[in-house]
Image 1 (cartoon, rainbow over the protein chains, first blue to last red):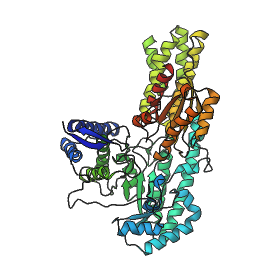
Image 2: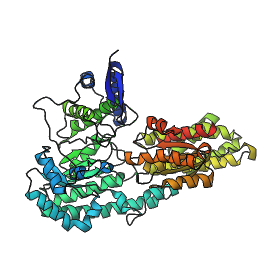
Image 3: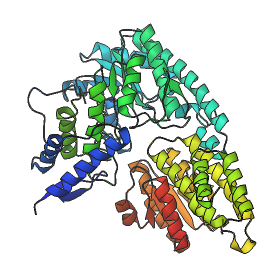
Image 4: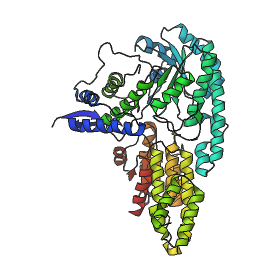
Length: 354
Length: 215
């Protein structure tokens, strides 16, 4: 029986028959449907994915006319960083990095980010970041975002002023852990609004809340609050909210935004809150399981994201790359996988951008 | 209350993280003269398994898992106290656990540590960003049966391989079972580096840890 080369979620190459591929596609979609309580993919969509995996082409693409916006987070660091942060080790300044993405890679938007890539450490160097952003804005045409992670972890000990829930919870100090998170939410909100306001002053086209929810429901709440306050102060500043994972971890467990409990929300519920807060673009994330095949992972990811586009009233730019969106967990995800995952997200999930 | 009703109530008390109720049920079981080990294994333990499943599905959250585990521990203490000394369940052993140096992701590792405590392990949680030397020293110091390492990044998972070598060089690799986990880690990786076990989630980690120590 013919076998087709594909990959596991950790990137290593395997061969699967058409029947094996189809079984994994159905199982992956069913897993998403079960967890998210959303519809699984239809038969013709499973067949479309199967054809993608059976194709001999190393690189696949969408049909002409179906192209979508292609944007990059942290791209300035991806060129000069080494493999340790998914970079390729080319010594370029951040300005040059943006220009390369715009002029050589045809990125539709680009982003400036600091090497720490969290909002908190940007605050004391905001003047330098304003200057760097202004220089980039003056020498490029594509919309320029400034991006960073809300990363509430930077507000907890040993990096920040509040107790660390990861230390407090195992000691049974649940009240203290929750109080620490509530304080961090307010502190982070204030910092983010201050920083983004300064970036708006020098003409930033937008800001990107990247990897939102990485530190759990408190992280997501701080982000939503900051988005709401920013939108009220700077209505013309585009705000993208990208997630850290497919569901919001309940490290606090009882935090709410607009009357909705944040812990445990899946992407199709996250997007509504981002819209409500004033976000302009939503970036859903679906995690890759390294122990499952790419067929399983991609069908699962597409099922989740399709449910997002079905309810979203704002553009959906799905996170695609290392370990998310059906791509393997690999520093530089292989093109055979990335292109297949990208086609699936556009043609089935109907995303607006990657 | 029949025995079956009591077993079901025990599981429910754990899932609802109700420590007072769990203790009351354990006390009632002792008063009724029920087999304490049966109440633990067929009442409270299935409840904790449900907690693990609910957490894994994202419908139960970390503080509730902690409270549920505290309820279970409190109930088991009452039941075990009613057993003669020689019938009390022995501790499963000592497990040293931590996140490899350079990696600060420790939410998953913390959950594994919590569940292992519930299932009778003495857990030495070294936290996050732990130097490899520290794992080796702690295994020597405690005589641990298991050393578990977590890595969420491809750049830190190589530390799991290095630890295997360091344990051999220290002459203690045969005395301790190694377990690896973390989002980037797979069974394939565990086999490749010679780890004794890989687990995809906390519930599986506990089951595999028990299998390792029980042979």
